[in-house]
Length: 172
Image (tube, rainbow, N blue to C red; front, top):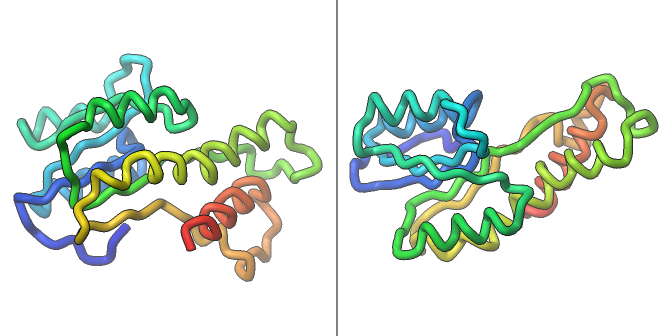
């Protein structure tokens, strides 16, 4: 998350993955600074913390449905956003797996799920939506200190660490 969020009621962030956790906290902080938020939640019709923010900040929060691992949903979001421009695009959506599973223990399907969600899909979202960001705008992703190659001293969360290291490399 940016260290300093300028206060400006005319600014809007497109926040991918804003239903809970860090994404929800980011949405709340941007709203506090006067920004408008277009945030995504995964489908399923379940009410999320982002819906509560939308109720508290009438007219300043729009909620879109998106599973970043589904290219047709990314294309649908792109179509729904036609005509809008954003000051920031931030991809927060991500996942993890069992923290004690080593690369040797994790199933191939689970490995692919984590890598697809944390490394490939954020880049696909950015490539699909980057032209909705103002020329002076910012594009970012949620990384993790666990994606650091030099900071891996515990050996835990191997697949998650690898997915965030891959994301960091792709964003360079």
